Image (cartoon, helix red, strand yellow):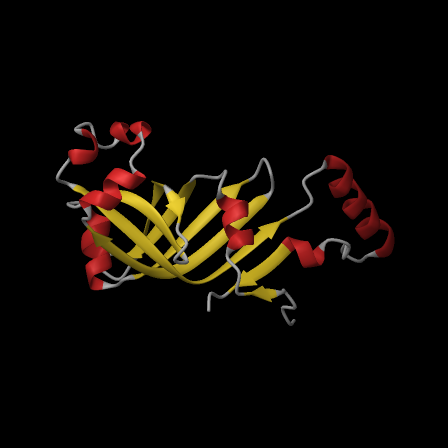
Length: 170
């Protein structure tokens, strides 16, 4: 079965899909070679084809990334039927000017000392490739797809082009 998903080099659509999701599951490889996932709050996508997060400089993910920088981010919003998977290289670093620029008060929940907390690191994920899916969200669209499949024995192809796309930055 061939995958005929469109491929784009423009991350705009991906960023539009995930901007309201906010929480991603970040997967790294731990010291035993096992996959390790945890939720992360996305701060913002950058103009540099990257996604930014705050992390504690002493967290396990920082040590895992130093050993293997290849990571995956999964975004899911079942209420709007948006799903995305982002693979890339992670880098954790401290840049006080960038921290001040990216800081928002809700982050104080993780960093009670505020933006001057010496343990805040920026976690930058430079995107290698990504995929996103957005299935028809309306109940009517889903009912139509179900009825068509039931009657014809075929899956609905009306929205296939919009349901799945691959992104590979230049």
